[in-house]
Image: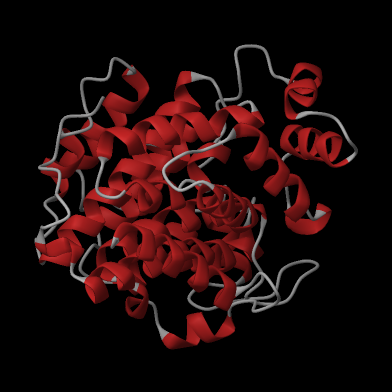
Length: 333
């Protein structure tokens, strides 16, 4: 378990309704905003981004989708929120697998292994049977469990221990059972819950102190990168790319998103712009950084031009806000 960060009780100021609701909305919509911003340049290097679009500052169309469209990152986040709302305070694997499969749309950019698992579940296999067929040896160490994790701290608020447990539990359904994937999910989920508390109480974010509380977990790749972040918040993006990495491996994209937020925590727009212009797995780095930014600052920190451009289909922007509100209502009871 991570070092405790002064957990709040239901009588603490951070449970004041509107500041909390604003940040619950921010965490989920932030996932969607960052995902949609990064979507058009996913797989590009930072050099390719500069060469083709200059700098991503607004919603752009993708290869086969409109500007503001979301990807598997947001779609799986929605499914996780729905499953957590089925039985508040719990997370049932069968329910989660069902939600993932019901929401699964093939054109959302799912990774090959997760695509295979969800397609098998949708075709009638149990999630355990699907995993037995498509499980990667040792478990996946990709960022899939972290990218969708934002609803977990909302469902568990203000309990950090429970947040860690459910962050790991939700990872199992898609085979993200390698310690690198699990730590990434825990790091993202606990960062969100701590940032909600800090933002609601008006406490500033001290970058080095924030990352130091996640050290000593005996996962050397994360320890090395988190230590570097704490000492290099003013680094150039090229250094971040070279030292941390920007691939779909959780130990690259999760720390890269954390650096993006911590290096510009007072400027929500800049934090997201930094994240999606790093290159690599840009939609996920954006989604991760967006949820951190929204957790601290709240939904209105994102420019209206971004929020207005978000996909608003049946399970689009307004639906995501409604999920955040339902999770907040539970936290406030």
